[in-house]
Length: 278
Image 1 (cartoon, rainbow, N blue to C red):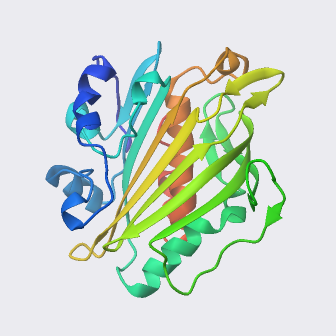
Image 2 (image 1 turned 90 degrees about the vertical axis):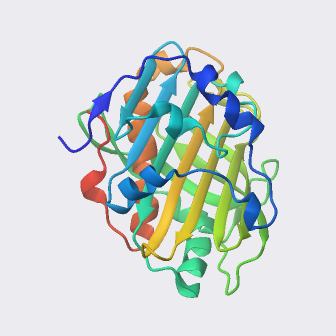
């Protein structure tokens, strides 16, 4: 089976302590975050996808990750991770030639929020591909959620701020405060959930309870871009039990669905790798 599954037996906080000390800061090329080791770069260029999921009280699940400590000892992990219940890290390789055209396409793909809709993932409980994001759009703010057309830029700004909402098939409607930073050809997207999120009468997240970060780093010698998705969640109730989201593997398939969807929008189809865990 292409995606090997293994359970890594360790306590997550002990491994991630160094990440807090080297958390990402904006600046010159010398401050580019440390995300991909040399060994990982080789694995990713071969087309393998590396995924690690931690879920408090449920343990860990991994795919193509043999050195979990090294994989997680990165500056891409947001500060304050210790208060969260779910931590997901996925690294992949976007096989699209590095050029001004692809850089602009990456920016416009990131900021085209309406096109998040239709994202699919493999549902373990249903044993089939299912739609993950039912609705999505850019909005004026998390207080004023009126529709805003997708952004389309001819040039990439150094910093772009926006808001968008999604309707997740399990967790309901979520609004995000989003920034996209661009420096030295690298993109850093940070999405932080706004306000309280409820589903089926239960609290899912409080303000800032769901943080998503995407790193897209050019690799001219390899003919593409290294990609890293980091997601952390602080779940406020028993919502996961009610929604049958019980295991790290469920969350691993969700983050894989996001990677596949983004790559497809960029013109690189990896749908054959859509299932991280069964």
